[in-house]
Length: 85
Length: 254
Figure 1 (spheres, rainbow over the protein chains, first blue to last red):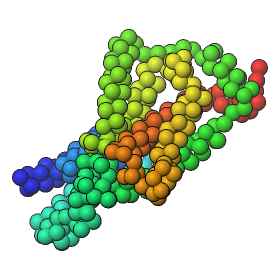
Figure 2: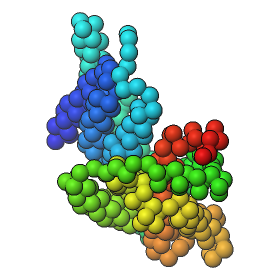
Figure 3: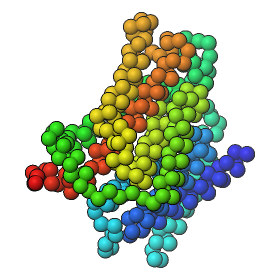
Figure 4: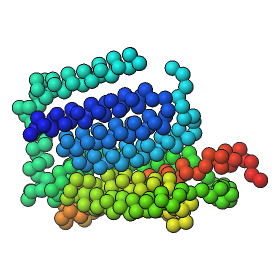
């Protein structure tokens, strides 16, 4: 049973890594923000598998809700597209 | 593009190598010793008839507010300081507040379409009830004041996005009222932290002297109120449009 949990954890966290990498490479900042909240959702699943439901409750609300809203506010004061390499 | 694939694959390989080393090869030595002595202490005492009990089957809340209570108390103070910093950066005199109100009334009134607004109303009701259950049941099931409060802050954000700042202010959630509610939450936390000293000759934050789970429940409710209204306060201050701030800071009043 524990092996199964560890395998699910590995899959979920690697998906999180993939999405965080995509978020870093994205030039449209709003799309990057959406990718980063998908990554947060995968990490929240990881926390749940690690038997930390207290962290999940706070992490989901902060990482998907409050953080996204504050960064959208910051993007609205600058430009949406990252220019140049 | 080729470099991207290379970087991504090397990250994944490093991750798989580290997890293989920790789980299968057990390089950190966690397999033969799954429960440390400190963890065993918490599990044995959190809900047991002893002097060190917290009257709570939820060991995480017991650690957060009782065994490691000072950490959480100071975290609350750090949150308080950051909110006070935001408020003092965006502070306005009374005349300036009046100007902000008159300028805001001239702003074009915009809101989203009917479907979004109706869905938001339903979702907000659900979020509020779930956040209340997270916070008020935090001493029995996973959850607690901060978790409930941050869920509630998301509800406030949704109202902000689907309606506007003025809807909240019309419902009575003006900055002054929100600050009052925040102060009430902090006062509840401080009163519960000090109560054992005066009532039971205990030490600061020795809440296991209080009858039953009163201590944990009070602290959870206080933190819930403080976090909810703290976030709401920051959103209300940040919700003032930028051009209004610029007009007021430049002193260009017509």
